[in-house]
Image (cartoon, rainbow, N blue to C red; front, side, top):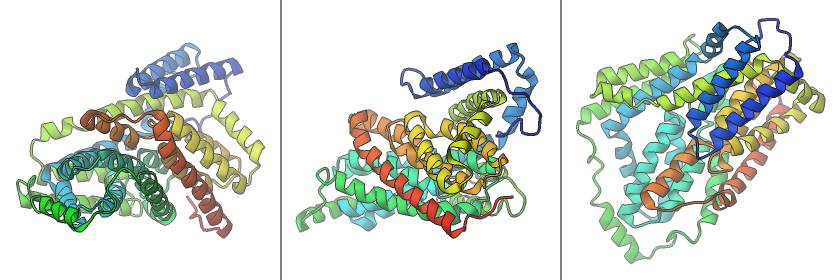
Length: 455
């Protein structure tokens, strides 16, 4: 973000700061409230703040384009990966891989549970969280109907394990794209710093989920039950949704090259948005059919949500209140990363659970930039925000988009409702353990002085 960093601005009067913060908080309440669509809430908040900013002469109307221009690359990544994933899904590749895994596990509850957790982790790491969770929810429901298993343990595992997969790479989760873009974090740094703890957090989640669902699935099956499962699975056809094997092969190649492109983009001077758009274009050109339909399935709702959100944060940032908040944080913790790491990690996790990790990341990015301008090393703080905002999404049913999607699928397709209390007992405990582990992990890296420097 850092929109006005290069301009000398006088901080707005305290009453204007307070007014803008109140409107921002009301916007976040609207985002979290079920009765109002989060995109509508974000656009309403943006409209109100832009009108206030212009009326109070905080900045000229034309400067809203500067706010949006700073984050155009985020939109490019969302559009490009959305097209790529839709084309790849149509090829039958994801269904093919999932059916192979079901066959490999023999349908046994324990192995299938572990496989779905690992598959969720891998899909999210490669495909970003929204399309991966949509694909996995559909597959889990089909598998559970076929094997007569309750979908609840599997779908909730998808929701929670997805947030571990979301911290693996630059493009795995929307908060990562925002943070990585603002901080200039290379793709490879995610593999070096956040990916190792992503694997640890997955193990934590799987162990706790297995214990919490110990009575919900037939974990121990006798020989007769296993024989019936094997008979059912033998009827599954991995090629059932594959209309053209050559299209599947091309889709797999394009997907692999796009992932490689994400890793090499920054070293060769390209943006992640260029790679994503190139991958999407290649998918349309070499593997796509129904181009108009595919482009229409790009998640324009998320793009409009980001548009509103970036305008809200940009308007609040223009008042100078975020710089004051950064100064307060530094005065509270000093300039010691050892004290700032747990503050940023725990605060971002807690607020992400309540509001949603996307607006939390957007709000804290300019604060960390302001803290860095005060001479504090920013690298530990950026990684604290990456881990905290993503893993904090496990805390409540609205904490992350993966939880929202999975719970919606469970209620709509399986008629099983999971309330806030039930989910918090599950995801909240997992989040606490994961965040404690994240703080310990980051403090260890800080002690060893191994955070890669950012230019």
